[in-house]
Image (cartoon, rainbow, N blue to C red; front, side, top):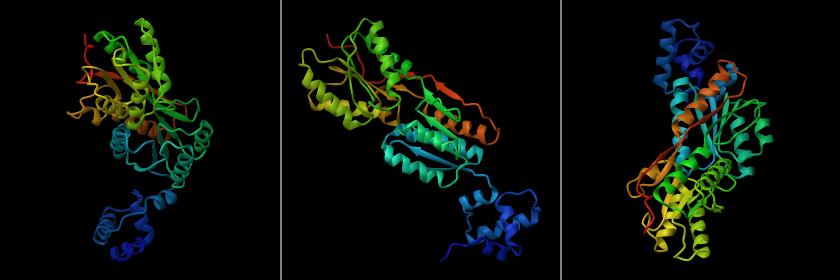
Length: 334
């Protein structure tokens, strides 16, 4: 079966193709009875308007291109969920792809999204150089999530990573921990703020900072713990880990348990993001909550302000994280 066309709908409804086009663009120039006839014909035929063609015809686009950094990380799923809800409210359509945290693949992914001539682009924690993002703004408004920017035509939505890391260290220090190690997020753009927060909080508690370079993956969490096992004996092993994100923390816990170290009896572990993974009963991860769905909503609202309210000044939204205590942190043994 061939896909029904606008001409098929026009023939079924007994109207011109131009009138069908007006109905599909929700033009107010069509009478109610003709609109009903066209919509009924479209429903009978199973006709769906081509979103891109409709955008090109009207010279406006309801498409929002979204590039997700890592499809395996539940944090991004929660952000996109908030975006989807806000997009539905605004009458926008989301198109998603991923660059898998590779500059080359992100360039290709961004070019693919721009080929749809979208009304806006949202990039979730991209590793793209600033010049590539600046070039994209020549074709479409851009919003960054979990990455800062000083580009005038780019809006940003972030949490306050320094505060988040501070909350983690304060919680562990209040429990009595003194050997607290940070498994950071490596080159991720959120990592620098969390490192600053960790260092400042450790200094304030008169503790010696120690940072193990890692990444926002479970395999990196496993590798970081193996490195610690080579650096420390069981007698002076760190009693607490502040991990770059929940994914990293789950990997770290797996490696600790495989080495015979109990969580939290021997080593307390804190994640970051408060994803659905952290809330699972058998994980029950203490973590720092980012308001993920709110971040997604704010990104779409920023695009709507640029597209429909004609705002031109950049918006830098920074949200406050909070501590969520579960079962992976406790006072150190002894």
